[in-house]
Amino acid sequence: MGKKIFFIYAAKYVACYTCHIACKDEFVDHSWLPYSEAQPDYGPSFISINEVERGQFPKVMICYVPQPCMQCENAQCLKVAKDGAVYKREDGIIIIDPIKSKGQNQILRACPYNCIIWNEELCIPQKCTFCVHLLEQGNKEPRCVEVCPTRALM
Amino acid sequence: MPLPGEYKSETTFRSFYEKGEALDTPSGKIEFFSQRLHNHLPEDKERAPVPCFAPSLEGHMSPLAEKYTLLLIAPHARYSFHTQGENASWIRSIPLHRVHKNGYDYWPIQIHPSDAKPRRIKNGDLVKAYNDRAAVILIARVTQKIQPGAVFSATAGSYDPVEPGKLGSIDRGGAVNLLIPARIMSKNAPGQVTQGLIQIEKYEE
Image 1 (cartoon, rainbow over the protein chains, first blue to last red):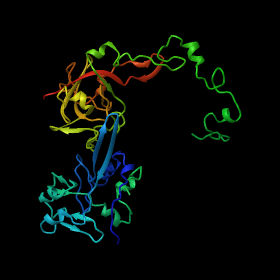
Image 2: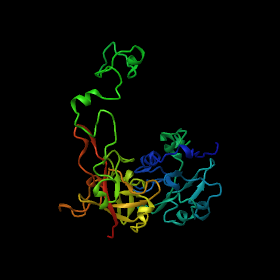
Image 3: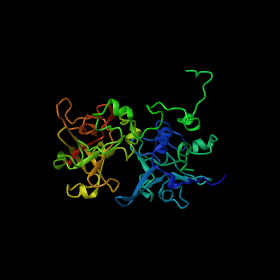
Image 4: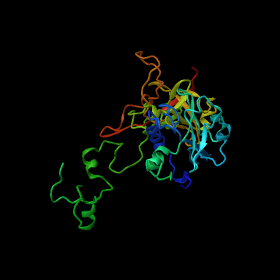
């Protein structure tokens, strides 16, 4: 099994937030155990989007940089997690175990990209799972990649 | 509905271009000067037979601009269809759509730094946008995307008055349509006016 990565074509990325809605649709009220619990209805999804503004009026350049989990080679969240709450699969995808990670908010703070969100209701850190539950059902892509209208996410 | 049996879809003006068939205008050609508008509505200065500049009744050149110095531009919203679905929790989570502050999701207004600085407005401050019609509480987004003298806020915010039932209550839902004149483009042509003069000040809760 090859390593799974996101490829983001930033020039095509227009911040239409379709990936955000798709992520909400996939995870809100759906717990995909053992990989992920349900995502909160309100608040950030597993893909956050940073707006970068450069220049001065009338010459302004706006870039939108999507930031899903980077699935780091040398992951900080993996190092700080206790009792194996964060683990790396053979295909490179890092998973936060929703049961073992309960209450471990040091995992949230460890992420240098602020990609992990805190689920207040269940008291667990959550992040992008690369939709592993879909990949195991035979899908080739996570939901956000499937729905991207400009094919900026690949 | 089933289409007529013989129907074949065709690009607009194709028969005019290829066969020279007359168009549905008095001259049968493409008209730069509209004879119909000239004959039927000669008094309409805002929709003249030849498109031309018409001064805005509420713009930077009108007398009201001395009192209300900023021109509010209010087009359609990017992340909702008017107010439809605007307040749904997934859409409300989009930080470019609504900005969360002190337990409420406020509607953003874009303002240039040169307009924000004399008013002591910083990025993420609550502001009151007002004119003679109404007052709306919005959240400031100080940005270079908008030109000085103009402010930008989309029209999709739902009405949520601070004191419900009271006449003239301030709105905090972001319904900037309250600030915009009710008139249409010309009395003979539809097209809602989407700009109005306003003033902005910092709002303290």
